Length: 254
Image (cartoon, rainbow, N blue to C red):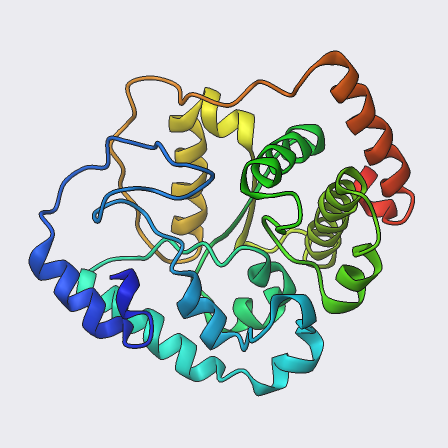
């Protein structure tokens, strides 16, 4: 389906006809990228087109928001739902945060799950990815243009520390603005891995509160999670970089 990001309804229909319906048993990925055709996909090109992402490094959410066709986005997502005869789990990454208010209005029965993770673990993960992909290559979510430009001259560790603190502060701010909203749900990465069925039950309850219905097959065991952060020296360096970066984003310490 991912190859049909420009015509998602065609992709959804072909997928529904050609892929055998079965329970997902593997949750393995390489930095979020799965290998098989029937495994989850971020569908990123679809979101980039709909949300007017032409250049990650120059993206300015507030400026592009008025150019986004929210009704068209709604029509496409609901059309995919109709083809699969059920709800759709999407991962629009930071764009859900940038445009949260508009998305809440556009999809008034959807549940938006913020899966947070300890800043040190996120920093370690991004650093490993960048070292494997090439340190000059940005990895993960891009902050808006003005923040991205301010980080270009920083070293690798400082870039990642600011990236992590910026997005933590952004999500904290968004949840603070919409505190108590029935469509927002906050889960922690460790909670999801250690007690996946309890986490799924919370999502099921949130879906029910917003007029939907969700069933799931209980998982037989906890999910494996990455626990390696680096050497003791590397951990100290990351902690210091995060401490310094957090001063620029007070809400990242919440």
